[in-house]
Length: 173
Image (tube, rainbow, N blue to C red):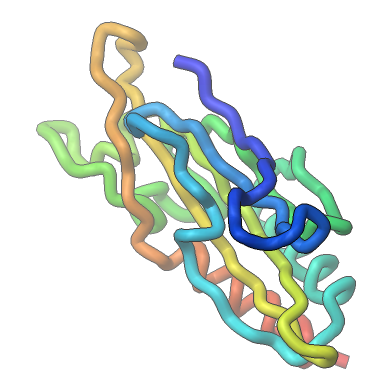
């Protein structure tokens, strides 16, 4: 199954120049794309957009997340095509994702997981920005195309870990 992360222009009743880039993830187990800016956790931070962008980039790297998306102008950093199994960020994947359970335990821990993890930085006031961290994932049994892919839901723990790490880094001198 093919999956990607795309950045698209939002269809809205605003002039073209005022539209924000939108990221969508196409993942196994989902029938339609996931709009990443409509999911996840957001926090307003009193810092510059560039500083928050750099700190979220650093926080994601410290978790061992390979970042193929770095678009400072659009305020997007993360990955749209990470395939992993068993562990992520030093924890079992089931700490971050709920994909159900079976005879072998938590599905997230025994299936191959395809995920999109994105930090989105958006200026909200002259002296503050909103940081949204979004995670979307699907899982596939190692039997490959013989089994149906499963959509997973986030527990919110990974997003909170990234937000807390960024907030902590911003307080450090």
